[in-house]
Amino acid sequence: VGFLKAQHRYEIVFTLPEVPALGKDVCPAPVTCEYMAQQEGVLCEEMLLLSETDNHVCVKVKVHARVMDRHHGTPMLLEGVRCIGVELEYDSEQSDWQGFD
Image (tube, rainbow, N blue to C red; front, side, top):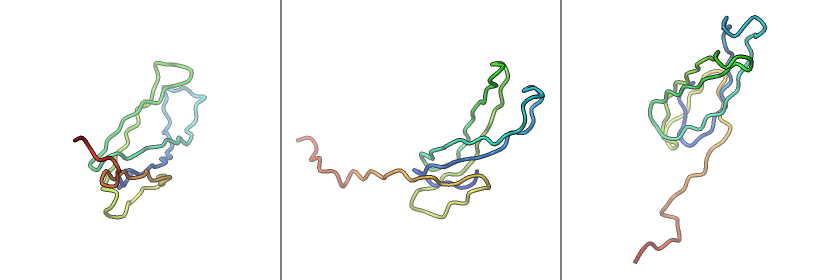
């Protein structure tokens, strides 16, 4: 999906290829999923999309990306990927908590 930024939420839209095991009545359709990039590094997530009519039939989808620190660089998103939000950053130095004595 490209280069993502940590602590950002992304919408990923892709089209499944034709899969003969899913049957003749199933046509390729856009699939939309939401992903939250948690930490920087190389990302490889897998998910299984199950058939509604046959639980033994599924399609494995892999998402590959590089996640960079939220304060560095400019994300390079591939087609079908867009940023839909940024998570608030918690800074422990701004806390009023005094700690243990």
